[in-house]
Structures are given as C-alpha cells and as structure tokens.
Amino acid sequence: MLFTFSSQKRSFMSVPTDVSAGMMSRNLSDNMSFLPLFLINLDRSPHRLKDVDDSMRELGLDYERVPAVDGRATSTAEVNAVYSHKLNVERYNYDLTQGEIACYMSHRKAWKKLLDSDHPAAIILEDDIVLSPAFAKLHDAVADIANSKYANWDIIKLAQPFKPKASTPVDTFGDFTLVDYEKPRWALAAI
Image (cartoon, rainbow, N blue to C red):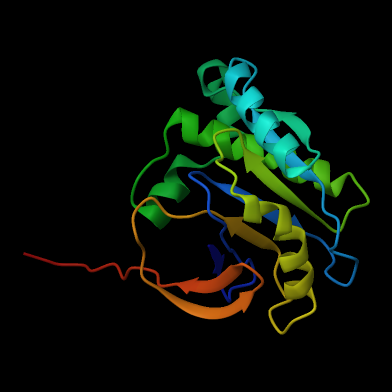
C-alpha cells in the first residue's frame, strides 16, 4: 500500500486502488480521526455507484456522492473557464482530453464541498475505485500523519500506479507506506 508524498507546498500520497482518489486539507491542527468521503460518480454510471456502495457497506463506511461533470456534455466555455490548453502543454508537453478535463472539474466540485463544510479535510474518491479492507483504516493513518513531521500537506493523492514508478519509502503509518515519487527529468536535444 502506498501514499505518494511530495515536499512541495501541495503534497500528494497513495492507497491500493486502481484509480485516482485524493484528500484535501484546510487545517491539520483539527481532528483528523473522521474525514468525510466524497465519491465522484457520473449520472450515467449507476453500476459503478452500486459497486462502490457495496464495498463501502462491507467496510462500514458512509460517503456523499458528488455528481461528476460529464465530458460528453461539457461546453467549450465551461472548459475554458477552468483550464488553459496553452499552459498545460507548456508545463506537461501534452494536452488533456475532454474527459480528463471533466474529471478535473469534478474534483474541483468535491474540493468546493470541503471548503463549504466545517471539516478540516476530506477523502475524495472516483467511482472506479477498488477498495481493500485496509481502506477502512485510512482515517487512522491520516490522523497519525497529521501528528507527525509530515503534517504540512494540502493535498494527498491516494493511488497505486498502474505502471511501477520509481519511489523512495519515507515512513510507515499502520498498513500504509509513505513514499516520495521521483519525477522524471525532461531532456532537450537539438539536431
């Protein structure tokens, strides 16, 4: 099981899933023993909602559904209000698909739910997540991290990469291992 951690102002970590999930925090000095679970789910994907709902019930966890932004129904104006194709290409060397942008917009909706609440943090999941039994212990691991030298984070990414990525183990919290992923270096060449 992995947490991904970055020492930048915005930090990230991971859990055994097949997809992206995340947590966002406003104030780590608050109690981290209970964090709301926000589940991003497309209206046209009720079968995914049922699968996650069954898993959540097995683990004894409650969640709040966040209706996902549908990339098939998103206008150019809506995309341009939150995403710069030019800046993304400059920074990451490729453009995002309409579906990837809609996914980002869905996460923004979940972040807003956190900011509109009284909670210090939230766990944000996508509806294709595969939950392990250890996921039920995530709250404890986050509380331990909040009381550790790694407490200065804003965003934690919960994911297990599809492809192995170079990483360095940093610490262990219960069933979870905090790792620092190594970023690939970009090379330039002239002919």
